[in-house]
Every structure is written in structure tokens, then in C-alpha cells.
Image (tube, rainbow, N blue to C red; front, side):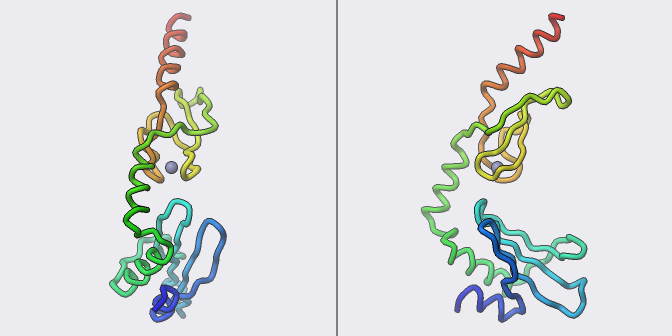
Length: 151
Ligand SMILES: [Zn+2]
């Protein structure tokens, strides 16, 4: 049985797809019961929520199995993939587009892995968990603070 068949068996159909994500949706009579299962293909994460309220969905075993099957088909569950991901996360990565925010009094940048905005206070990206390298910025901040104190 394919993931798609497993989703269909519990009332979900793939209804939206881009290169970044795939969404399965059930089409209940009651709009409040409408659920989206979103697979984020680049960051390999999944979100399940009620569309109307944005609330969490409690995941039962048939849904979990369908989700697992989908992850398996994407190759996300391969042991090597998982190890590579862990290693990749632990490798320090310098964010791109680093600029100094006067307002926040710290450097901000963009995570190279998931493209979320990150700031100097984060040792790890809050979205994908990537270990962030702010070594230079930490040095620069102390220069900025020194020069402020200086006048
Ligand atoms: Zn990230």
C-alpha cells in the first residue's frame, strides 16, 4: 500500500503541491473538522493542524502510519539520511545576509538551511535546529559596544 492509498483510506487526498511542500487534506462536511497534513520537503518536517482554528490535531495510529509511510517514500527515514541530517545540523553554519539591527542591538541573518530569519542570540536555528556560527559577529558586537561606551 502506498502512502497516498493509506491517506485515502482515512479520507485524505493530496490537494496542493509545490516544490517546497505537499498538503493532504480531508474534506469533512463540517468545516471545523478540516485538517491539513503538510510535508515541508526542504526541511523535512511535518505539520498537522485544523485549518479553521490553526489548532493541533491529535494524531491517531492510522494517520501516523500514513505519515510514516510518506516519510519512508521520501527517503526521510533512511538511517544514512538521518545521520547526515544530524551531522549537518551540528556543523556550524554562518547565516547569510547578515546585518546589524540597531533596534535589536544584535546581528540578524538568514539560516542557510531553512531560510528563516535568525538572530545572534540563537546558537541553533529556532526553525530547523541548525547550529549557527556567530563567532565574527560576537566579536563585532563587542567592538560596537566598546565604541558606544567610548562616545
Ligand atoms: Zn534553519
